[in-house]
Length: 274
Length: 303
Image 1 (tube, rainbow over the protein chains, first blue to last red):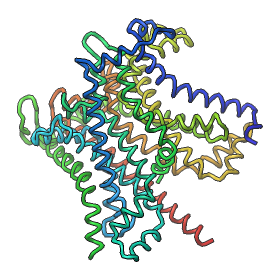
Image 2: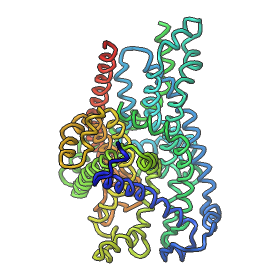
Image 3: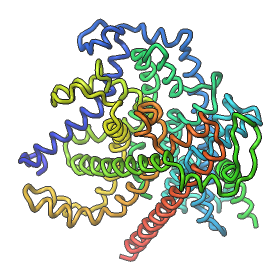
Image 4: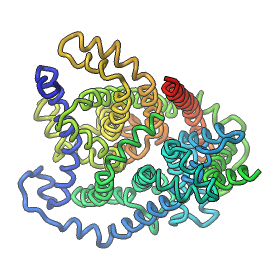
């Protein structure tokens, strides 16, 4: 039925699909191409050129030191996810399986924190961190990112735990296992695809986080997205280096999302509707 | 009882992190918003000035009002275009076939890209001398040849909206695809037949059934549009002049470039008030769809 229908509507649909592909792929491909161009090819809008890996070498050298920023990004995002997922899973389990007074209010409050604009919290964070000596530190950035991703983690994981049949753990509890052991040995394995999705989502948010890193770090804990703006120099923009840094920011997310894309897409979409 | 202690143990870590990290700065900002505090002059909050900051913002600050207007323009254009583009993508991509399934898998990519990178890249690609998008646009419409996109207030706004739509519309299309999947198949097929009746079928049968999903997309997108900062910073820096200076960006410059903390806090509170109203809407929608989902599940159980 579908394949035989090739009328004007089918043609229009195919055309739109191709437009979407072009719109998504072209800008990314262009940045990727720019990252292996010499400056003169960048300014000549060249399509045919001799590729070079010099830009990738340059960004790792002084004064750009992208290696440090890459390391910072990896550490901050990994630690944030490593804390957010277990902690979020516990809360999600509590919200999913128990009823207690104020449950709905607490859940709403957790989600509502994400409606607070960053502009309003960043100044108090700045002053608080200055007081606690957390400015420009991993610990400070992890703390801030946790407060951003935890609500999403709790919310997404709750959806997955809701879908695990309660009978599975009830039988385990009857067999003498504690609730916590049932959570660890039955619920977590059953909801694992969901946990992976939530981890990926939290990693993405932390990896791309810009505003807090911009204000709360200076040098030691600078992350990749903030590193991008250093290629906007007094002598002008160093586009080929910016593109190389852009490739470094994008590549990990690209690979992760393609590897897990099926889970990722399903749960992202169902999570947002839920 | 035993269960209660367990619940406490499960919830306290998450609650401590999320609520403390939100409540403390909210409370602190509220206090600061009633004070006159220039960080450049004093590291401690200055004298209490009552509602002065708020009064000034709302009655005698053309820049704040201009930013509010810019924000309104940005949010309305952004939400409308995102929804429209996402809807078209979703309707097209729910078709069966290799082309459509491959395109569906690409939709996640713009969403995982760094907004800061998107902003910088678009600034690069719109450069009137060597920007690839500029030369493509000038190739199609020759009169655009001399346009300096980011030096023109209106075009800069268009660019900003474009960048954000690129980031969000594919993801929202995925959400809408999820919604379309729950619309009964025969109503979708009715809307796929060629001709005028297809349009009518889409608007009268499919669209009404997607109302809850569309509402979620609208509210979520509005919230994220109101919070947009990264792209403004990396694409336009609020310029030219103040033509793309959204509230989120203006609060940042007031606080961290002009160090007028009390004033920035008051402005931030006004923005927060708007966002909280939207949060209320969103929570309503969330629980409404949850309840109807439960009802549907129960109904199915009775059959």
